[in-house]
Length: 155
Picture 1 (cartoon, helix red, strand yellow):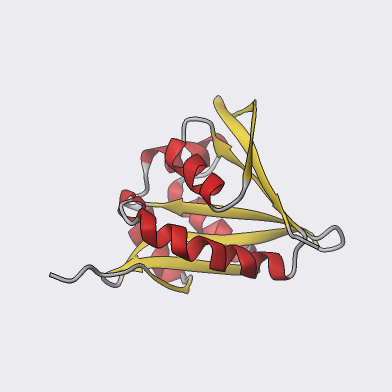
Picture 2 (picture 1 turned 135 degrees about the vertical axis):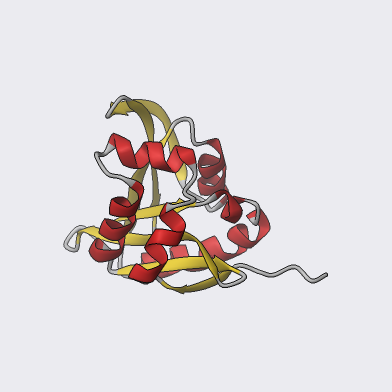
């Protein structure tokens, strides 16, 4: 039996419902802390991002991610990633794909910065493996503790 790899495609509104209906609980909690449901957060991310992608396994959308430009002048972007448990079962694929996507994000930005729930251990480990710095300090938003993560482009 061959193992299907994760396929990355341009994100589409058609992917939102399939991902939202199976979104990881910790991702739902992050969305809720900012006042959004799963579908709303995915739709907003898709609309606000200059670039957005969907990870698919066997043609089924399992995660969506992208980057919102915070300041074109300062070159700052806000990367985001929301997904299902299925995508985290493909850790090796995500380790391989992540740097390629991050390089695309850094093509037109000098710095990437966002927040991750302190209890989202899988995401924190993945961010660190991709080369992000995840700060130790926490800040409370919507009753949930978050840690800042960031990366600067090598000049």
